[in-house]
Amino acid sequence: MDHVVYQSTRSSGIPITASQAILRGLADDSGLYVPDHIPSLDIPFETLAGMSYQETALEVMRRLLSDYTEDELADCIAKAYDCKFDTEVIAPLVYADNAYYLELFHGKTIAFKDMALSILPHLMIAAARKNHDDREIVILTATSGDTGKAALAGFADVPGTKIIVFYPKDGVSPIQKRQMVTQTGENTCVIGIEGNFDDAQTGVKQIFTDPAMREKLDAHGCRFSSANSINIGRLVPQIVYYVYAYAKLVEHGRIQAGEPVNFAVPTGNFGNILAAFYASRMGIPVHRLLCASNTNRVLYDFFATGTYDRRRPFVVTSSPSMDILVSSNLERLIYHITGENPEQNASYMRALREQGAYTITPAMRERLSLFRGGYATEEETSEEIHALYEETGYVIDPHTAVASSVYRRYRKETGDETPTVIASTASPFKFESTVMHALGRETDMDDLALADELSRLAGVPVPEAVSSLRGARIRHTRVCGRDEMAGEVCRFLGLG
Ligand SMILES: *Cc1c(COP(=O)(O)O)cnc(C)c1O
Image (cartoon, rainbow, N blue to C red; front, top):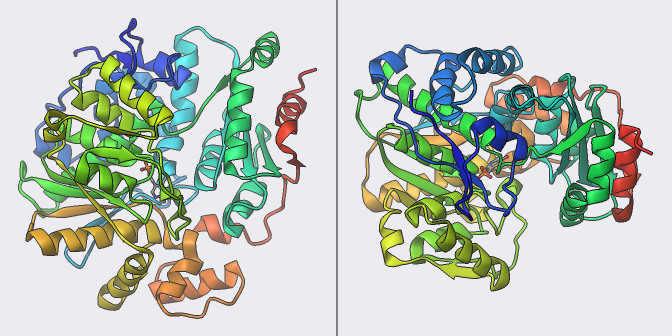
């Protein structure tokens, strides 16, 4: 099989292997690792149609993570996609009102981050072993809510790893906070900080890049690593479910093998939709990729005008995981549409950093023809949840509703009847207050009572991730100031 290697989006240095890219996360020049070419899936759709999620994962991952053996990948996949998911099919498709909702929230923390974060720890451990690095891996993460819990759940009790998560003490939802402070696992550490998400993020970056800290860690037999969404160890596992969704539509006779589909994706950091783009480059027939934004519609404007401009107010919305003005993974797409030109990409990224904006060339815009941008306002998002429920009884979360609303408008405006899959990125139970409000129901009760009400309305049981919070023991109570983060890391790791 052809061998895929990885290089930075910002300079043409010596390429590295997939396992090295997973260990490093970010390139030294601050670029993102990209595959030197996208391998073709070259398996008949009829064959793919008969495969389980795990089998599909193996076929996709062995082509992109070339230096892992099949045994290593099969082992990682078996450990990741097991009974932690509450359904054997891992990512079910639900048909409602002319669209297929691809439910990516059946993992431990009921958001789609689980799809990648349940396998990343195993890919990292295998990568360390392959590269003869026997230091303990210490994951350091700042979170605004979803990523922290999914990373904790993924790394908890994985031998050879420790994980430390910092969250803004007063900046996450009550359920999100409760999910984190009750996290079990001897190797986990959760700390609230007196500050906002940016403070947490800045503090983590400082610890990462502090040479003295690195030396201390090294002497102690540890190394830092990162679980954030720019790691290709998160991107590659996300390609799997697009291939799988397509194959299941074929299997169930909803489409002919080879017939194109659309994917509509609620987008923040651009990781999820980029995985759909890679799936299409591997051979999945795609007519359109609908990139759905909320009121922070920087990506919509980019696809409409060719100018990416982050100079605008940041708006807090009901789909907080999409409240983002700098979508880091877009850099990989920009790199590809320059014709894989790292210097040109680097100059756009410099402009973004220094001036807050950049404009791509007309030739580059032509290479974006697969994409359509769209956005939904807060009102449209709420209406979408309400209308879909009234028509079909199916309840979706606010992030999914953004994509669903964008898709409905697109279909009406273009008349495009291509079968469409909407990435459903969170369980409605994770954002139950917003959802119940959209449904016009009473919300003045505690989280757990609200979950019971939602369960009754939607006709689905309260997910384990929520019900297990009842009476769960609080295990993490530490809070620190912004300049005490390094000290907390040393304390947890037992460094002098
Ligand atoms: C992270 C997240 C998104 C955004 O995904 P990106 O890969 O960052 O574009 C959308 N919805 C939910 C629920 C999320 O947690």
